[in-house]
Length: 300
Image (cartoon, rainbow, N blue to C red; front, side, top):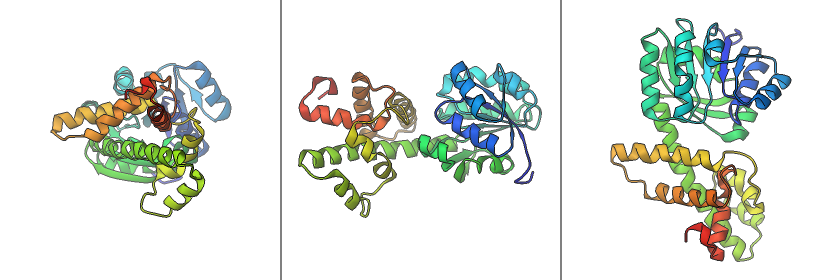
């Protein structure tokens, strides 16, 4: 396959991440068939992009070369698995961008191989901003042959594609990413609250820090939302809690202690209690402010 070759793609899941990703593939000229249970979301995508829709994963996969999934969790993956594996033609490849468990990724990879299909666990980092701009980072687990085959597709919406190893290693890498990023997010909430309470100009403070050792993507892209209590966007708190639950479960299996990650998970639970399940998870800032004010629903 050459970089300019068109491919027939079945894309399952048009959420905050999946919708923009599928849009990039359609804009690149690929033949994209989409599946999405939310009919309003499906209609909007089809109005804005070249592509067709199908009523089920199996129907979309039946004449596809590549299936791409972007779903909330293991349960949704399991629900579409038989439709995909049972209908994707021999030699096809399934790329999964869901942040899921290592166990389901390895199971799906084994099931795919018995049917002469490829499977790549390919969680992403970069958030909705990265999906919209086409600048995601992809952490891929699978065979070199399968990854090389779909790389031109992934390049439509990712600026970095890293082959981490065999099936499951993409998910393990994403877990490592989430462990680190939630610690950074909580530290940023604490630092901004400290500066805010001291009466400092947050824009000046962040400007200094972005030139120093504390700089991070989270600081650069989320400090204004945190300062303004603007959370109606991005990666939902409940989804971050799902990701952290996967991290904590895998850590228990491997005997690794994650005390800071577990603590931030509790803080995210406090955000949910504030009504922030669908807020971007940088709403940790709201929990931090509540703790300072002594509000009981922060858990302090």
